[in-house]
Length: 303
Image (cartoon, rainbow, N blue to C red; front, side):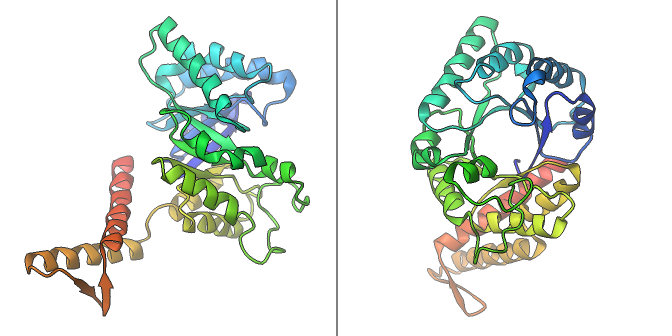
């Protein structure tokens, strides 16, 4: 499951140990924005050591490489993947503007898999962080069979479109000035492109980790649009995010009642299904089954 993705700077080993002990669904070891230029090489070595030495407790592990095309990205891949591929789940690709960025990473992975006999086929998670990336989002989503998600990079996207600088971190705080959800169109566009190809969508982190109420609201808005999960920048954010992106008990009970009503109607040979004075169609039944499917995944994840 990808409800909560804990982002951790690649060069700070003590944070890796805390992340390994956390309750996140996924830990993403970052080599990009959170790592100073002088620490890039050290970050790779630290990530390799942490991936191979820590007990991650069944969590999914991913790395975020540097932006394709700069001098760090290809070294992130060729130095880390041969040593860690069997324990990693995915590679997050930042600032993806065109399918060429996906192809660059995919070709490198294919070469390394062939050269080193790597059997674990890593997934790709492109991050949409500028207007060109959003314009090309459908082509990006379909650029590789390795793609499993699209990730929203809110701070860089805000900068790229020239949005006003309303918060210290640039990650979703102080949005009350806008009458609605400021990123509704962006996330909805990503959701359509992703779900048409059976991919997940992951929301950007919420920057103020000391404001749980607004974190929850940010996650709820994203979940309402069909987003599947959200990055966290602090372990304290994990449980709130997981709660929002998991079916509530009310949703579970509603879904069970819909399925029960449907099955009863089938046994009685009725074509139409009615529940509480409302007609239930096939789309509602699919939604109920999807909800219960998430519960099954959650149970499997915690067993």
